[in-house]
Image (cartoon, rainbow over all chains, first blue to last red; front, side, top):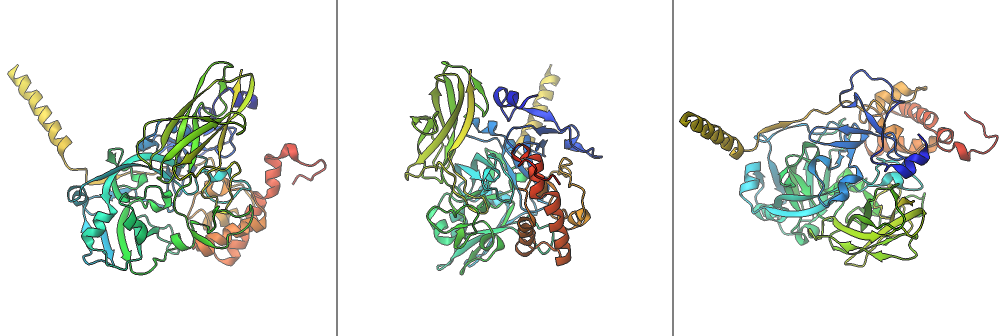
Length: 409
Length: 125
């Protein structure tokens, strides 16, 4: 099988092959007849497609902690199915068994009335909030960062878009009576570290942010069904517009603080450069930093898939998705000439400002040969995507203009 | 006929009860074993790596990292210990860095990924 055949004939995500070089293993389970991605994409190449509980075939990043990436084909629709939604844990083992009769959500700290809620109470005592929002890992696409950086070597599939149903965080805090002068609110999951010296996963948001954002919620449903275990069952925080690190899974404790909350996961990691571009010169270290926060504008071409062969003179429907931090997508444009000229795409149905926005643009290959198709989005704040990727040592915030190659014959 | 109708009603009633019931109280899943396709390469110190690193995360986290020299791997190992809190002592850390810089060093990258761009006369390890 020539690499040329792979490049022009078959899309990378559909091309599967037996992992010939894999060593024999005694207990296989999902790995018994494992198929590895034989992509030309070095970040996906050799990674197995695996079926985890409550999940469909996803691209394995790491077994411990479980990290599973969504194949790009699932982004052909704005809503990502629950079983295709990516998985990212920091700790092993993650929660694998939940007894709802024992689970409670605690709201305490600097409040008038510390409270606990059962799942039944969360569902019955509050008016449900509902919205569609993108969850994207801070390090989505890290594998493509150049010069390369250490960390989980994700392709572009550490993201997903779902309709979330739950209780507004503001409602919970009103009920508990957050005291004036509160500074931070922290969120703790019940996933536990592999060793006692490791740090329990917890994140925080500034009180000012929570006061301004009626959309932040504790979600108990995802696309109308309970959350999959590996997406944070029975409840997770949903912080629309913010990177996934804040969307604490398997949530059990919300604490209001009258001073800055101190956590390894806020102060030591998930930090970005505190400057306008949120970047540093490639290969250099961070100096002044702030916690990562809102998502940058991104857009992707989903169909045709990268590497597809198309016919000269025959129109092709370019389709994809775009999203930002919740200001809303204003425009999407495509280019077949490395950005010399751009053509405006038609936006699809508006599912809300935090959602993937589908777009489409007809394109007719004008002549034979290889084409680079690019896509860029601009949001209602006028923010767009750079031609050259910005760099930071942790490989967060990637939002360079995405490109695919197609060959017209 | 009457009996059949009664039976159908009973079945329908039972289905309704199940459907309208509360959510199941206990839910559990079982996770698969580690990815067998990401074995550590043999080499001096591999046992120490298995004991000290693979206790907290699987080998695929290691083998898919960018290749690096002792300086780069040293920074990663230091990060695991001093930032993440991995319980690895100094002597073991040295062995781990040495293993990684040898098994997953920059020379290895040249050998497999950059064969075409290797300089003529360059030594292969």
